[in-house]
Length: 617
Image 1: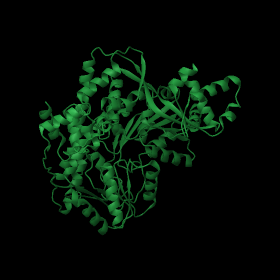
Image 2: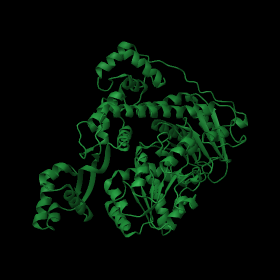
Image 3: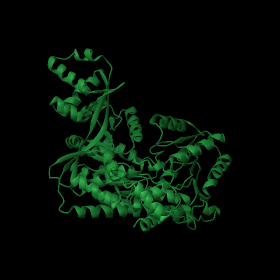
Image 4: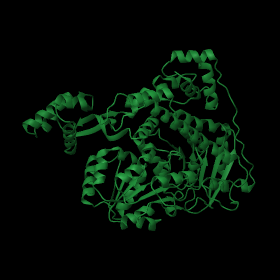
């Protein structure tokens, strides 16, 4: 594959987790004359990679939300001088016209796309910003593209190869088979799981262990139960402060016996070879997730144990995540009307994803996906993100600061300081209002505040990010755009539900578990593995869900809708409410605290939706 890159060809590498994918681009990057740009969604991974390269004398840098302005300027200077060999960026960075313009002035010999399965709409972790990367690669006239992933089905691999014109001989798949992993599935009722987990931990050799769960609350509960039983266990999830998460991860990395109870984001990019066990306390979201998560065990080649504690009730929770993402037809119609109605070609506008999400009761990721579809269809183009509010805390007395400037600049700063809303600690201005009053340009205000920060006069913070767009084409038929968006989101929902059900099919099938898992990824082992539950004589697992009901009369549903007409205006919002699926409107109306919220949480969403349609008409 490295030979393909050095010959000027693009390539796809499908390597198991922990098999050294980074070497596939770091070595070519040193041999190529121009810049290598690495696209990754993981800030922690970017930081680790850059630290590793700098320690070996290789010029590398990362651009992400945690980089200071001084570091940003230093990176820009290094890029212009041609000193950098590798630049790591998040995919969202490409939605900035100024960043793209800077890249166009550089010679980019290699573009690397990590987690490349995110490109495919039918992949297990689709990210809208990834959809646009193929177009950016063409615009930047990149010499060659390397796409990397640990989990790609044959269909997803075909999508990636088609997007980047990757020839069959440049698609390298080393195989997922790991002979040192023992895979087991144990069927149990939800209330039995903690007992099973404790029993396994007590009899198995001590070693670093990861326990995967679906919900933050479950992570806290399970970690507490394990700690109470005498194990060194901690929770790790997105609801924790970043500093607390880093502390937990560092303790786990340094320990030879710690247990960490986590959600799926944990472990992306970590390099710990001696993990001895991975337990799925809840069902994995997909077979791709499962393969990636068990891939973190036994990277040192020594035996490791991977077990799923399988309860059918988890299927409903997993499916509900998907159903919660699908917007209603009405919400999509109103979103499109706001974005495109009465616009003209060349017109610029800006928006807040958070505000759009709240206004139209569509989750923020789904709003981003809709905007990406409109970009790819040539209707709009992203310009640049910017912040609406600047806050500062004085580090020196205002008079001392003002005394260093000439009369004109002093007058400008005096007016700016006078416009600020003064809080107990922070002063803040809405930038657009300040620019209007000062009669200047936005850039001058921003430069002035940044200069004061650089001199140590103030501590600066920004808030209220908005993304700019330009109208490229006005659609002849807005209804046709609406129908196409509805089709795409419906197809996405169907694909995700099917992916969840493949987990059930794998666990409930007959014969070697490893062999059937490999077959899903297009790989044939040719024999039974001899190191999984079924090969050891475990019976097949039957995940049959009990079919519950709404437990509410038609009159009660109508009364709920009439009491909350905005949040519960149709069958799908009502079904979300009954299944306990939060949405922007439900949260704003405080209905997530309503006693009826989640009363049908153990009933499949499709059943609740059908009954809600019948009851509400």
